[in-house]
Amino acid sequence: MAAENGSTTQNGSAARNGSNGPESAPTFTPEEDAEDLGRLLREARAMQDVSVAELARRTDRTADDVLDFEAGRVVPARPQFAVYLEALGYSPA
Image (cartoon, rainbow, N blue to C red):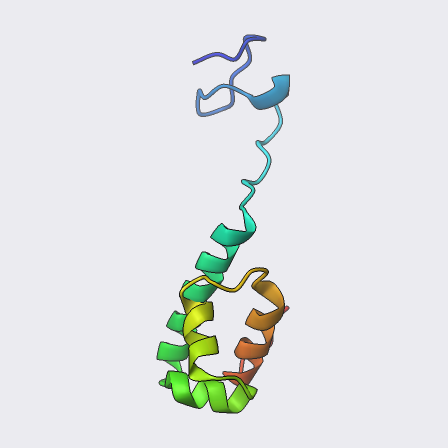
């Protein structure tokens, strides 16, 4: 499908904003970001075999705080995500 200016990308999709360059990265709302980071934390915690209670203890938070984060109810999520990752032994970039 062609864009209004007639240009298409290599895969045949319409180019955005009339440019033939790569499409910009998708943007996420803070809520979507929180949901993704919550899921990642839950997976990282499971891989390390760390309980919610143990992660809460390591970070001086409550178990409800950890569960709220994993459910995507903490916005903005990135600052707290780094704290949890460090407590699991990961080095956030």
